[in-house]
Amino acid sequence: MSTQTPNPSFRSGADAIRGGLDITISLTPGEAEALGFEAGTLADWFDTALWALALLRNGYSDRGGQGATDVTPEALYTVLNDLDHRLLPRLQGIRDAAVRRHQELGGSIGDLALAMDVAKSTAQSRRNVVMNRAATSWERWATQGGPEREHCGACGHPARPTDPIVTTADDDAFRIHRSHATTPGNGFFGTPTDEGVSPYSTGTRVAGGFVIGQRVRITGVSGPLADRTDLIGRVGEVTAEARDGSLNVRGLSGKPRAQEVFADILGFQVTELEAADGSTEPTRD
Image 1: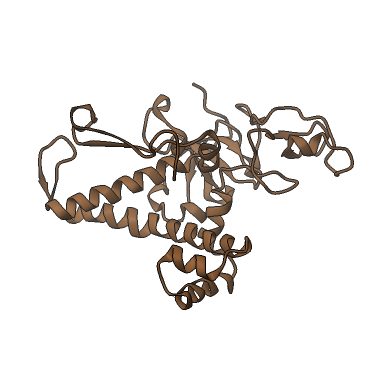
Image 2: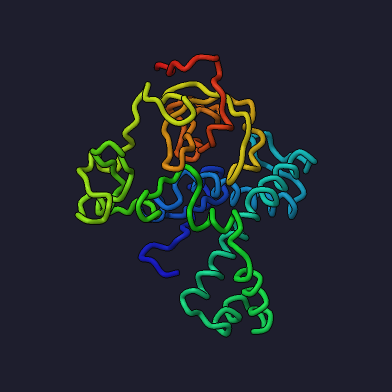
């Protein structure tokens, strides 16, 4: 891929944070919006892959500020959990989605075989596996994003930089692209009440009878978070409701609130949450 600035870019030696090598992957605004909170978690698992290579080649780990330490089953648990249980299914979903889209756009078997560096018969077989079944949950994740990414209620697509998702001022309060709200005759005509900013504020009642700002306990995980069983039992705070009725929750990472990043805010179905203290009152800072 050709860009004006090398991507990824590198900083090594004394300039690197740990004194070895810093690798920076730069995203455009559109790319960052498409990935949302998941950019941080994916980057963390890519880091695990590089750490695992060094761990296996050196036979020790020198992270953590304690000097060189031997490889342990606990360290390999992290490697296997991050890569086999979390990253690989997502990479498979991206690959399958790309194969499906390649065929939909008229890509030839010859081009597919060249890209995969395999014989045409093998490429045909691999494409048949993808095309002869419905998209898997991870393929849908690759094309649609996680539950925290809001989609237009009219066309199903996410917000675009030139066409944010807004709320109509009628009783239905549709969450749709601004272009739909300002186009007469499309069934969604109305005055937008915001420019893509969440209409929810502390104390607003949302799906499941919860309110924005309420402390909730995680009781289950599903979809893109199905492998995050470590979250069950943790307590966080409801921050927003997505178009599909799922709720975004912050405060699950254990970090101080001021240090939380996008990747620390996760989406849950209302059936996977319960009031942490039995009340419906929002927390107050």
